[in-house]
Amino acid sequence: MTTRLSLLACLALALVAPVAGAPFDLYEYALIAQQPDGAKAVRCPASVDFAAGCSAFSASTAGVVFPTRPVAWVQFMATVTAHHVEDAVRLRAFRYVLADGDWTTVSEAWVGTAPTLLDAPRTVGYYLDPAWWAEQPAGETIFVLEMRGSPTVYGAKLRVAFDLGAGR
Image 1 (cartoon, rainbow, N blue to C red):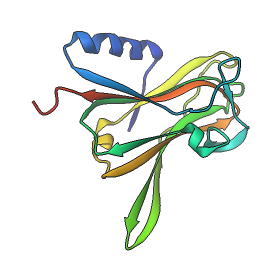
Image 2: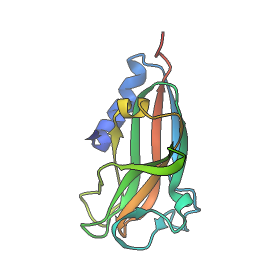
Image 3: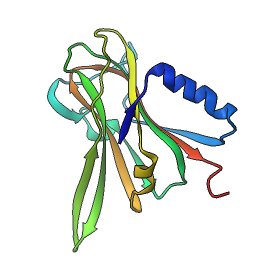
Image 4: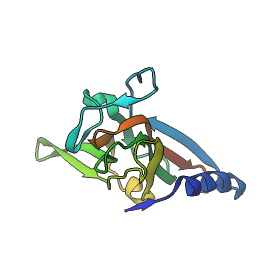
């Protein structure tokens, strides 16, 4: 479901895609909406398991209404400083489904990822399967930044490249 790519590979993809003639409409959904402190960082309380990245659940979320236009790729990125080996971030998707007159929550989480170097800011992330994106039912899906341990987060986003050439 996910593919880990280095920052160099991500940069190469960004540089090669426009040259190859693939028309994209790139949109970024911020997963941290709170104002960072003077060091441009968000410090969250430590947790032993993955939990929403900020004290207010809504401060680390972005909602996407499905169906969307076809996508070429979807990428989760976070710039973090890991202070301990267990510090990590991941992406979770929530949606509410009406079944037999009752609303239920369906959630799915991707793999947690962390920098391999401690005490230095690094960008980590992975690509989501475009087929997963295309299969989402109509309605809103909430994407949540979750953290484990006590990493410092400098930014987190979901980058979506809508394929402008699809359907031609």
